[in-house]
Amino acid sequence: MRFGAVPTREAAGLIAAHTVRAHDVILRKGQPIPAEDAARLDAAGMGELVAVSLEPGDVGEDAAAARLAARLAGSGLRREAPFTGRCNLFATEPGLLRVDRAGIDAVNAVDEAITVATLPDYRPVVTGEMVATVKIIPYAVAGAALDRSCRVAPDAALRIVPYVRTRVGVVSTLLPGLKAATVDKTLTTLGRRLAPAGAAVVADLRVPHEASAVGAAIRAVTAEGADLVVVFGASAISDRRDVIPAGIEAAGGRVDHLGMPVDPGNLLLVGGLGDVPVIGAPGCARSPKENGFDWVLHRLLAGLAVTRADIVGLGVGGLLMEIVSRPQPRSGGTPADDDA
Image 1 (cartoon, rainbow, N blue to C red):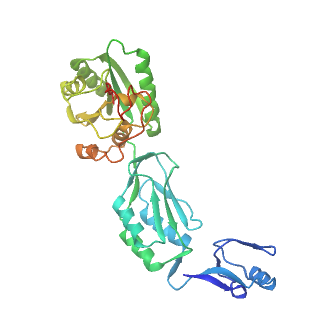
Image 2 (tube, helix red, strand yellow):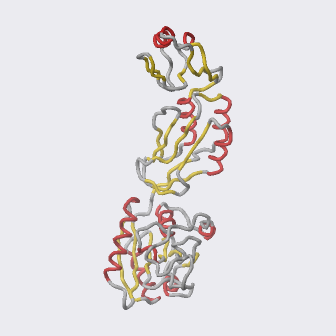
């Protein structure tokens, strides 16, 4: 691609590098220069224009962006028509965006003229949400560079994993001092979290804060068809031998991992009863603010496994916003009973 000043009389058919408004003529940036406009500007005394001309093998910005976007887009994504060297990708269904980070990095490393920007991996998205944009920086790119970008891009580097679990059973344990209104508000908040995924609470059991009662309730909500169980404890889980993990095991289930390097969300538990995942919710899950519970909940709703390795890998970026309602700030002060 050639870029620079050319005599105005020779600019017809070239691409305007900048918008020009002069002598009743408007040249649009990135658009071909009409012959009549070049002639009028030349006659008016404008001796040169900054313009772009393509060389053999160059690919125009829109065509290049569309081609690379098509290469990157996997299931659940659609491309919009390219414009000004940009081609955007949008979700066609709700779910989790999966991003091949190494693949996107490889594409961006090929040539400074070629860029791809995406939402973070595992980001929950809704239908119609923009998840990525391919932008060609200049007005054209060398065909060889575009070829390399498409070669290093893995198949379906971007895709939507749709939500598959829609029936959620909730077990809430009760202790003196825990208001019924608090439990009701917790269920309302959970319902709002589930709605974008097309999921809903199908069973709601409230039982004493005892392992045997928790176990019986977990069995009961799964018998009612729940494909995911969330247990809200009246007291935070502080050990694998505490009431909630003991209740999961009493139901015949398993505890896969307790604790996570996400704050708020430290005291989350993941386990299961057969093939039904069970989450022991941290206290912060009662709040509508984003916390570690959201990250695990959405992965499980999308049918993705959440392993110990997945959880321990969440530490970088896992320090979220301070919750105003905490008795003490995390930055110091007298230690408080942290129901994270």
